Amino acid sequence: MTIDDIIDDLHAQAASDRDPATTPEVGIIMGSDSDLDVMAGAYDALRELGFAEQTDYADPPEARFTFESYVVSAHRTPDLMYAYGETAADRGLDVIIAGAGGKSADLPNMTASIAYPLPVIGVPVQEKSVDSVIGMPTGAPIVAVDAGKSYNAALSAVQILAREHDELVDRLDAEHDDLRAGVADVSRDLHDLGIDGFRERHD
Image 1 (cartoon, helix red, strand yellow):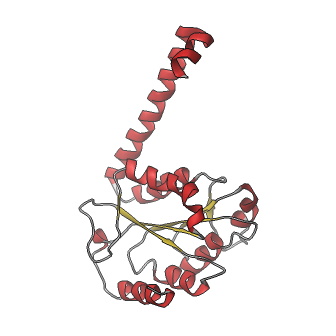
Image 2 (cartoon, helix red, strand yellow):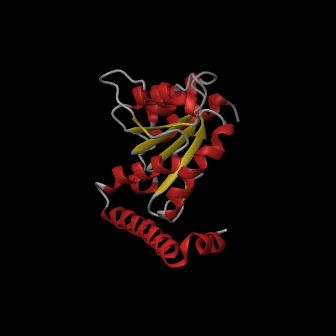
Image 3 (cartoon, one colour):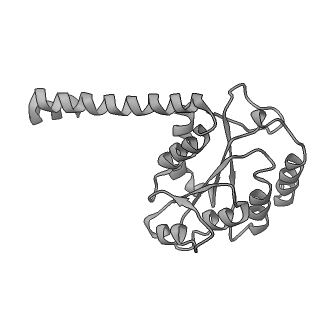
């Protein structure tokens, strides 16, 4: 498989006019596979919210909501980045999560420019990537999370989708309730057990 093969596949998918219910709603792209450990949070969040990973565009999983992922380098494969951004909407994507590291973390920004008006959520993989990811000029917006917070990026993506899908609102509410319950449990333990007992129980 070559870069040209992937580009051809993306254009073929865009021309296939598939039912949006059978295409991925969320695209996850990253500049290098070395970013995967950080970007794994996005996978975790989406799976917790009932999304399935779609690895074959023509053969979607049974889950109603799905996501896909690619490695796309803004500097090594700019032609792939352009193809991905240009075809995203026609391929059925509703939102893109883009992660990149280093001081020249251009993938989220450039993808946002190419895919506009499709929303792109940028994930700076490292602290030194933050300024690059958020540094978009007026009129070329990008949504961004803090360094390494790909889990939050996925939650934001689902919030965007939830504007048109009530069942996703319910899933987000349930996820938030679980977080609240976890804080309640920890708070009660700290109060009732005291700091020493709390440390013994939670270590």
